[in-house]
Image 1 (cartoon, rainbow, N blue to C red):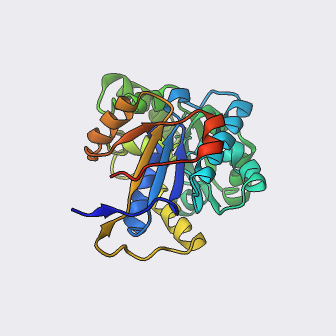
Image 2 (cartoon, helix red, strand yellow):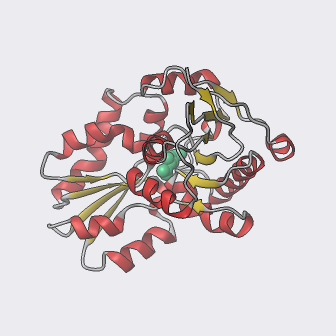
Length: 280
Ligand code: DGL
């Protein structure tokens, strides 16, 4: 039985909910010596149609909590929070911050039909960041920006293989395919859990771009990577602002049955105490 290492130098990972767990999986595979503290703001998910002010304020509060937990770096495993809040967080917090944005640049290099379909939340789709990515990297490509209301909710409920999920996916994907898209960008971390279903609907000739591995590579470039702990396991802590049993059940459904989940302390307490317990 491996003992957990101290979490005093963990990497903070944050999403509106469960979507960032796909990113966390890639981070753990790439950086097996690191400990992680994952915060799911499930009590406030989805962020997709929230006001940017709300998302910004949650991102700042949760980054404050993770900083108080002595995180050595922060991964915003959420496109919506990244496009809305990453800039402000970098101004406010003095630690490396890895943020996400829809993988329009790699998709523009991959597409042969020169039509790319981007699936993301409404906030991400209408963000200036996405407009900048299209103008900078995909000037010769038609980028179809498809907001996907309801889809993140289905993932939060772990309804991957569900009729409502399939109906939503077909409504969001088929029109873009009919326009000639041969590349689909998963511009919301929640959609990684629907990758199989998306590939099934799109068919084998369509490339689905999912950026978790690229984020893990990016993180390994910006931190001093910890060595593999000898005889001890790196720890992962989970916090949620929603029901702890719900996140625990989700973790179990994706193959992490023994994860223990804690309630995210309220923001005032978060900044003062910053305590955490080593789990795993
Ligand atoms: N997982 C998030 C993203 O990557 C947001 C989903 C949501 O809360 O609407 O954008």
